[in-house]
Length: 327
Image 1 (cartoon, helix red, strand yellow):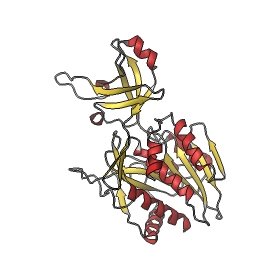
Image 2: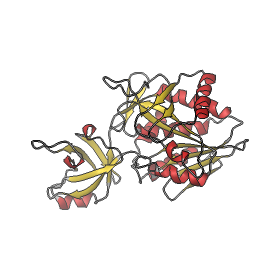
Image 3: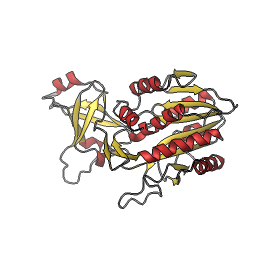
Image 4: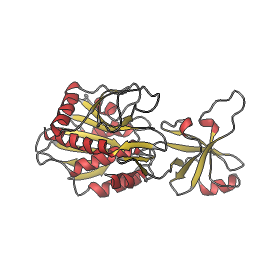
């Protein structure tokens, strides 16, 4: 799982530019499923036929947040806007990269009296001496992403940009590699543009017509100093979501997930997230609606360049999902 995470988190893939991530995932799963296709939004849709009549859609989004170039100043500074939820406080003095390989430093200008930090106070320095040189290196509309390398901390934890949500992509790849012999039909969708409004899952759920939807995503670990947000802690098992702002998990799905965790002998947590959402929100409202749930990977420092997960939560999440499908 660690090697797979390192392979996935290094890939460039902001919202709307997920094709490189999809290429790598397709190469990893094409021999494990019956069909693979991509739709107009860039979703990678993989189907594995099962022995039952039920179709379960699992969704893990490929995209991560980014900064899109809006204009270039005469001195060569790149001004940017957000693609997804950029936190200005987590963005100062960060290494970033563009799809063409150009790298730079994301920084904040000196604030004037009474001025507050905002996206408009950020700029990217790509080492250009002026506007003309900058525009020879990048174009208006190019998107930069955090480019810090992945590294290990402690015995079982990893840190990297794009853990949201390449960790869930790794978990879904693991699931396709470990399906039980008798299983329902699986529609594994590696979705596009989740960070800008669950767009990929919206169209994928409509076309795939599943009977049930399970999102796999990270959630905020509430175990850092002074963060009394929720009861989820890293290293204490995957979290079964009860509610966020986009979806209320179906009680039967929640119960079956918890029962699967108990049968698998793995720890689990109950999650109530007071903000944010996952692809489950899109699946829940597709066509005539469907029961949905979310399995969450506890993650510290979400939407930063240093998102931290615990590999034990990943392994236990995989065991839970395999047991869930068995039943």
